[in-house]
Amino acid sequence: AQSVTQLGSHVSVSEGALVLLRCNYSSSVPPYLFWYVQYPNQGLQLLLKYTTGATLVKGINGFEAEFKKSETSFHLTKPSAHMSDAAEYFCAVSEGYSTLTFGKGTMLLVSP
Amino acid sequence: DTAVSQTPKYLVTQMGNDKSIKCEQNLGHDTMYWYKQDSKKFLKIMFSYNNKELIINETVPNRFSPKSPDKAHLNLHINSLELGDSAVYFCASSQEGRTNTGELFFGEGSRLTVL
Image 1 (cartoon, each protein chain N blue to C red):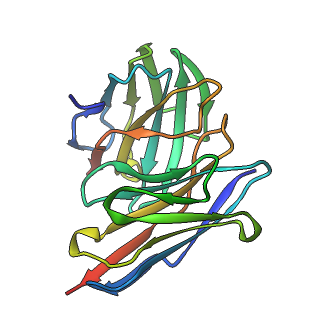
Image 2: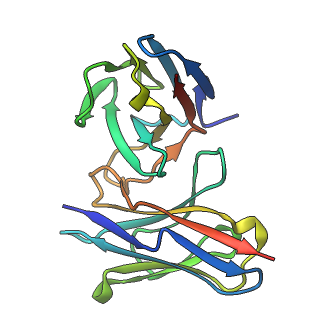
C-alpha cells in the first residue's frame, strides 16, 4: 500500500532563504508523485508532479522537486522564499490506477 | 470558467439538520471525488465515482450519501448533522485511462460549520 510521510508540520524560513520541505513515500510499484499547495481558504493547486523521465521536476512559482528512488524521497525546494509562498504544502503519491494518498501537510511560514 | 466548482462555499447549520453540497466539473473527466479536510488540515478521501458509479466508499457514516446524476456532477448529502461533521469538504476530479497518473483537480472547498 502507498503512503506518504512529510517531516515537520511547520517549517519557518526568512524571506530570501532556501525552502526545503521533506517528503518520503512508500509504494509497491514505481510511483507518481505530486506536490500541491493550499493557500488560506482556497482549494489545492498542483505545484508540480513526477510521472516518468527526468527526476528533477520544475513547477510553478520557482519550486522544484527531485525524485530519488534510492531514498524514496521527493523533497520540494525553492532557492529563495517569498512572502507569498506562505501556505500549506501537501505531498501525494499514486500508483497510477489508485487514488492519491496525501501526506499530513507542512505549513510554510515566511518571515520578513 | 472554473474547472471544478462547489456550492455553497460556506455553510453554517444546526445539529440534526440535513444539508447538501453540490459539485460540477467542466474538464470532461470521468472520475469525481469527495475529500474531507479536518481542522488539522488532514485530507481524507470519502467517496469516488467513475461515470456515475460508486467505486470508492471509505469508512464514512451512512448519514453521508453521494449522488452523481451524470459524470460532470457529484453531490454530497448529509443527514442528521453532528458537531464532528464540521470540516472543509473538497470536490475533485481526475481523468481515468491508460495515461492516468492520479492527478486531481480540486474545487475551492465548502466549509461546513455545525453548531
